[in-house]
Length: 215
Image 1: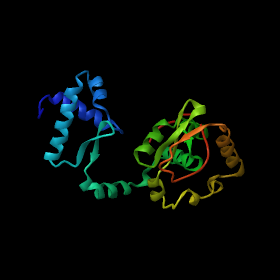
Image 2: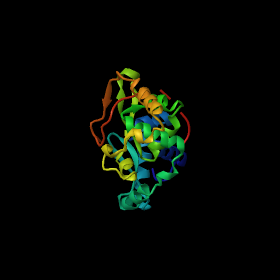
Image 3: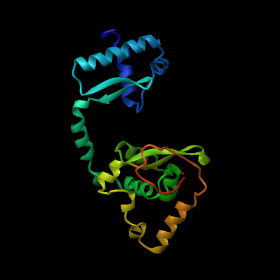
Image 4: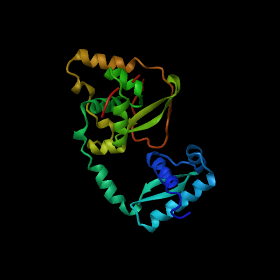
């Protein structure tokens, strides 16, 4: 299949664009209500087209599925761009959520909500998109809730060698009562059972738990 069936090809591209992991042809076929063989043919045609057109991205078959990747030839430019993101542009809500994650990781979205007192779903998603926060594992005692932690990019952007270089929490608490309230909220959710990813162990902190707002 060369450039036939543009509707199918366009739909496949759209689905792959929003996916953060390889997608199996059978999964694409089910979503698009078409045959797996037709999807596989379209995927291979798209991959070849990107190579022929010398695009800045590639379509690769990996781990039993297909995923879009930036072209290796442009990795240095992509890296420079990502590292140039100005963390000063983070909203107050994002900074608050990031601080909770940094000081209390691994922590669930519910844990961030409990400290901030508002729903933090949108700001956490924004922090993940900016590469500052990542999923670390699951809390088996809280409905298998996703646990979040900071990334190497977070350390790089804030000029930290590791999490041990984070300033003491006391420096940010306006008074002893506020500091005590923050610590009580953080510790109120003890007793969680974590499943933490072993790869990416760049940090180590504590525990977690409830739900917030915008970027």
